[in-house]
Image (tube, rainbow, N blue to C red; front, side):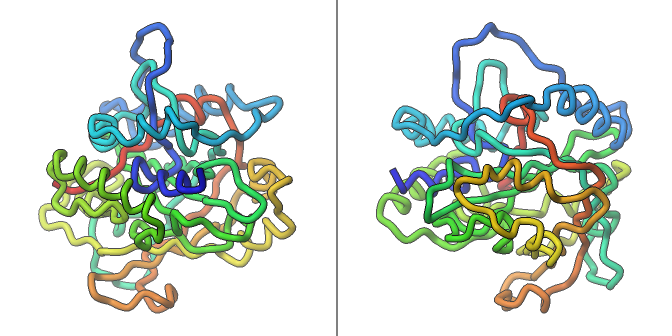
Length: 323
């Protein structure tokens, strides 16, 4: 089942995970993206009323997706829903199939000082962001597949979301911050992964994606609106973002192994410290060295990192593909 590590990006990338039906009573969860509230009021409500009260006393064991989960992930209707659900919570009666376990933290996206020319969130930054750090599946002795999802709250508007990771092939290190993350990742190697990629591509075509490439999630939506909810008349967006872990982030995970639960390891990261430097690249620009890109901001924690049942069971991050 090693090919399952491909699923997080191709069939519902980021830390939100993918959701499949489970037998629960129907109902509609309230959405934190109430249009009449300010960005920080909405973030406060989600953090204080939903995430913090549902912190785990004892962490549930990490598990991996099963064969029935894989079949669900391969369905066109399922994939399209991951692209169209713009709410902050999963549909009632759904659960996560990949990235099922993670931990949440509050961030500030502090804009860079250099003139990069990009608009919207890239220009304004964001004071009220909730992030989820997760693993695609249970780490093995030789591989881990970390990812990050961000929910950026906007005044008077629904939240905007971003998913980044390094690779569906995973990394040998169990240090969550060993590798940089991006919205564009390498094409997978194996036949099984390429087959799943083709299934996603067909679903993206049915969705009407401008670029249906499964390993590319666009960031144009971040350029079209500012944190205060004002739209941008002529948005300008980068093509590629790279989230480079800071030295402090890497150091916080020294000694991590498959036996040390990554959720416990993450709690060592303090509030008030930069976790990622965010670099931007235009299409065609070389990106092998992230530091040669435009520094568009820093992702700084403003809370401790917690694992919660709300984050695992309800929190949703829309997967973005431009139409």
